[in-house]
Length: 143
Image (cartoon, rainbow, N blue to C red; front, side, top):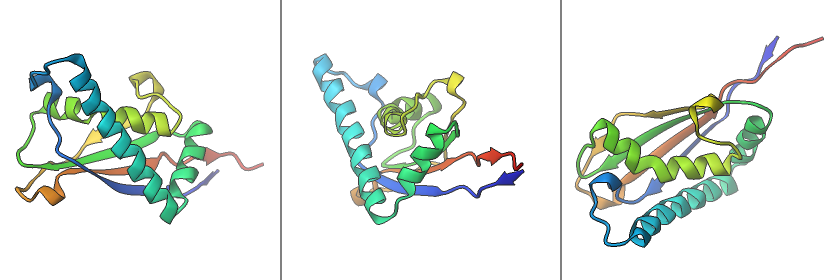
């Protein structure tokens, strides 16, 4: 058996995370706009990271061959979130990553989505989420 070492894609998506379950959206379009903006930022961060190195394309190819994503979210903002709040705040980022990697984010798909330690800073330039993406090493049988 041969195992290939995993590629790692690390990128930063800038923006202030908010818990959508605590917001008083005036209209459904406001929540949709918030979600769309985070999805767009995530796609742009992946695109920019991939122009520097072809890691994204390699990882996407591995997931297309049945590899399982391992994603670590490391959020930074003005305050810490509770457990359910951070999951809700990261939902559009997770959805866009699943879409970009041509997969789904449900539990039946076997991918791991983990929230790491939350950082707190008042400096807005560091608000956002760092994503560390790997694919479980692909194991093949050698004849």
